[in-house]
Image (cartoon, rainbow, N blue to C red):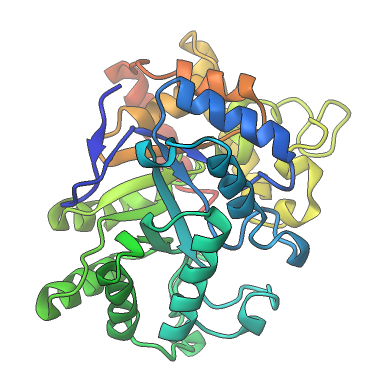
Length: 353
């Protein structure tokens, strides 16, 4: 597993990144420590978190994941310099009034969030700091269409970029990135950076998996031409693409207990809990089995081998799940299987978009 460069930066990361959003909710601190230790033991140098984690979000667990990671780093002197730590500043509240009282994302908000994340992480610098979702209205998190009537933006992209660039200049951030972005947003951040000599985004963290390939609808070309790397999140579609929901769905007798979709009503109301998302996942999972692969291995290999993806963010709740995800590295998909995957997508499109 060779490291890859993010964008046009000097950041060298493993092509698999450990996502940590369940640490502090589904995953207790001791287990989180063990998972991170195992990831490092197996060669992973890239960890991703966010100020709003853990997930599903609650006021009581805001910042919990960063704090867990900070205590883990503090207990392992010398490890921090071997890792690339990514975090995120939350966009305007999406029903979370405990995040900045439900208000927007001003330059002062960005600075305050960065300082707070640094303290929780117990580090002097964050290697990659991402805007978790745009400050302006965009179709994301299950919404498919842009609606100008819903626009509430109060802080121009230029002002956001100036605030982030000042934090880079101050040595508190090494590089910046985007998340849940659109082609327009990527273009604007890059254009303004180049026009005004500001920090240039190196990455975009968007959903990318068999049941949600919306990134392929133009964002891929944008990022390829502008030199912005994709960090693919939810490669297993919140567990849909492991096959664990195939037999009983989300609430049947054999549905997994305590898993993200079956265990949390709030998640079942989201894009991953749609009947169409489950139906689509069942089609892909059956295809994997027909080709002698586990559903998870095929879904991960689809991301691991995709030219669009720089690093795939895996989310796990046990060391066994971590090992399964890492063991899938090196799996190749035949042209015939890739064609069959595309045929299903042509029929179903992106049910979990």
